[in-house]
Length: 446
Image 1 (cartoon, rainbow, N blue to C red):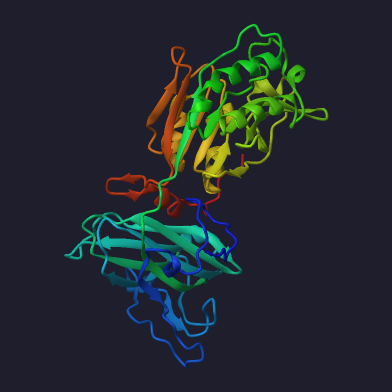
Image 2 (image 1 turned 45 degrees about the vertical axis):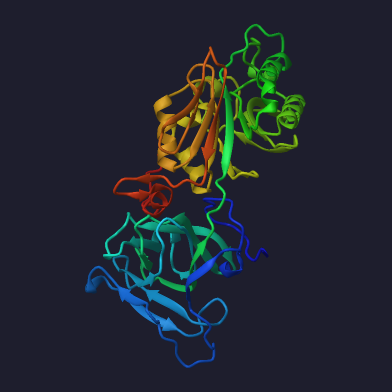
């Protein structure tokens, strides 16, 4: 299938562009609006779409614009007067079969909307044969854009008792704003293969080593026996070049790429896995506490420089980093934090906002409660490797999937990246969390 957009959105999955869902083998289009319409027609009807607002006094203005769509066809338009206006175009689609997988997709163009993820809302409410909700509503999130248009999608199996779906395309919480909706589809598709990532963590602390290279070698030899296993991601601790050596940060600092990344590259090639590890990077006179990411072929993908430094580090000449990169891998989006970053919610939130699905946390020691909280807050997995706390792998519900210990210094767990994170009465938190967040309220700058 041809790639037709440049992907720029949230990235809940490794999404491939699709020009038309009907071209996917085994797919069945249940709904497509607008259907083929003459763009020169004087007017276009909304069909089964109807305006809705919780109260008449809050209702925005609803219109159909015949030539406002992506390809010059019709578009559903909503315009607000002030930030209290809220309303949606709604329609119900029949013929849903419970337990099967459906992909909802729509495109929107917004004007005067400061926070689209909060204000522009595409929601699906699955209904049973009596018209009652089969589960809490699902939210579609932005996955890509083409020109001034943004695409939202939601892909998931339906509740087993679902028989129809109420589609809701809304605008709210924005003053004098307008959104145009176009190319709205609901397609039954074969269930996609589950993206499963096998992650590995270690609990090991070298002692009385003579050099950075010797400490690094201990970690590599600990992990190398897993070359015969299917491992996708390895997380080693913070500062593997200094632990056990008795040397200072500056004494073990080195360029990136450099000798440690070269050894880690050999490890990654042998395992056929991505490797994350902490070291001390020198760039001229500056020394950073850095974690590097090596891909399966042994190539340096990138590095993260620790942004939150405790006084014990900046008093010893470490300089903080100033950005939160998220890395594309062949299994999904990966972010990295280091140790003291865990203490502050902003760092993990910055990665979550960019679509990170897994965070690797090389850490010396810290709060296990905060590690689990960060996964819950941002609906992602976390793989930590440490010396003074638990080296564990945590799922988006805060559950510990695996732990490496002194008795079992290597542990692995499977991360199912595509599974929804349902909470009773609340729904899929992977999408709901980001729709209801309030980025519009300024935080004190102190």
